[in-house]
Length: 432
Image 1 (cartoon, rainbow, N blue to C red):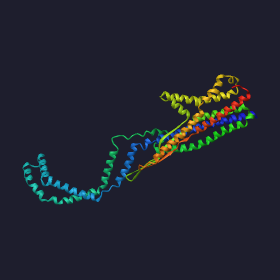
Image 2: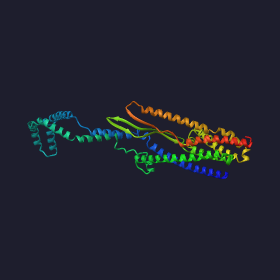
Image 3: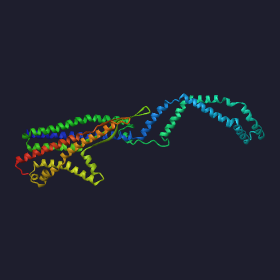
């Protein structure tokens, strides 16, 4: 019966490890989608995008121009100005004979009018023109021209729209290429809207799957640990501690490889009133990061500064490598007299193991989460409470991720494992 229990618990833990691996794959996939969403919807492409502002400003001004109507008083002023202009034109060019003389000279130059005829016409044509009294018709002409302008007011609207487009957009320049196109194409789309819709659906679907997997893995691993403790006398101390150590390793690997904290700050909506028109910007990401302990470690190690590399190596050693080695040696310590008598092994288990920063790391992680969450909430709150005439809706989606749960549970289980080993060693009469 003892061996049956050991085999069943071992198989259960293997199944839990497999489910944990599947969970890690799901969280990695979801993180990829979330990072793509954050990249596509960064504030750089929204509120801080000059091209988008031009488009929105153009739509506002175009709407205002479409409703453009000249005040009737303006047409009266146009009529008066045309009267003055036509009067000056009549005096300078017609009644003075300047226009007729210019035409006669051009005719003589081209040989179409004999020069003697030009001389005779110049002396008489001015008197003939003045006799027509065309200046009396100027008010009628100005009214006709004013009516034509009024009738073609829609053309004036078109000229204004074209002028506005030319002012906002240089037609000689090529339109800027959207830097997000590779992301669209990666997921089989060509537009932001379609890509956003698809990725949000994927993230939501994975939320359900991940939540279910977490419950399965957590229930299996912790359930079997509790079973080991309950069956401690049946399966024996060595087997129970070994199985619990195996469970601790599973939790450690999940804890360091899965995201620990999601820092997610967004502007959910930004609205501004311009000329009676609401300019609105949809959800935009201010900041997004989701990293595991391993991700942070490699980022630090790959950093340019030597100080970053040192910090990265220390985290790798004291929060990942040392705890793992301690767990493995603690388990083998139960089976091998050689390891029990090894000063190096004892030094690692009893002394170097104390330098493990896992528990400290957990406290730092929670403090960092509380700090980040508080700072982001306060800053977003200040933005949302602005008194400058624009409406801002902010959201803080920062949260602890599954890696934090598994890593914290590992730390607690590691302490329990250490206590059980001490008790077993004391009962066996070994000298630490």
